[in-house]
Image 1 (tube, helix red, strand yellow):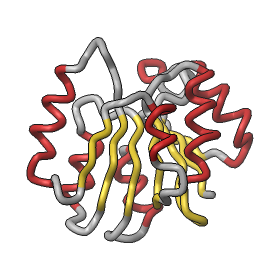
Image 2 (cartoon, rainbow, N blue to C red; image 1 turned 90 degrees about the vertical axis):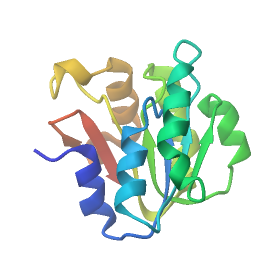
Image 3 (cartoon, one colour; image 1 turned 135 degrees about the horizontal axis):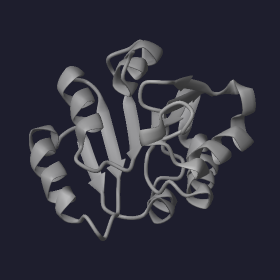
Image 4 (cartoon, rainbow, N blue to C red; image 1 turned 45 degrees about the vertical axis):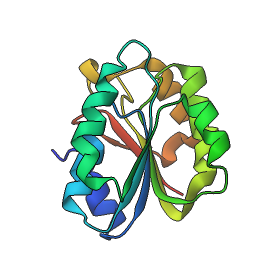
Amino acid sequence: MLTRMEILDKVLKKSKFHGLEIGTLRGDFVCYFLEKYKECRITSIDKDPFKLDSHIDVEYRTEKYKDRYILIIEDSLTAWEKIIGVKYDFVFIDGDHSYSMTMADIKNYKNNVIKGGILCGHNYDKDVNPNNAHPGVKRAVDEVFGNRVTINSDDAFWWVKL
């Protein structure tokens, strides 16, 4: 089974891209792409007051990519107001997993995805992967995209081409 990073590799089909990640935690996702693709640029948005020490880890891990990586330490609603109009090849949503915040992130950030780009996220469904699911994510994704969404059963990754 493919990981979410490997799926994006196959779907994007290019090595020069601009991505946005909402919710970075330790930076595994962003470091994968920055290491593999020397021409990509990625911005991460994350604010977790209970785990602020994780940002130190992300900043340390991404230091060598500072010319291609930006970390915005804010909640996704506040950060979105600063990047209205910026276009990305993909937006990966893995921040606040509540229904209301997932819905807000989808509605706000889908307009930041280029035509033909990918809006995707994590933690879709307990039936797909009981250890990686949040019911609010599935509900929001299904309400917006219905049967247009593709699911990866390995890690509850969802994506839709816009």
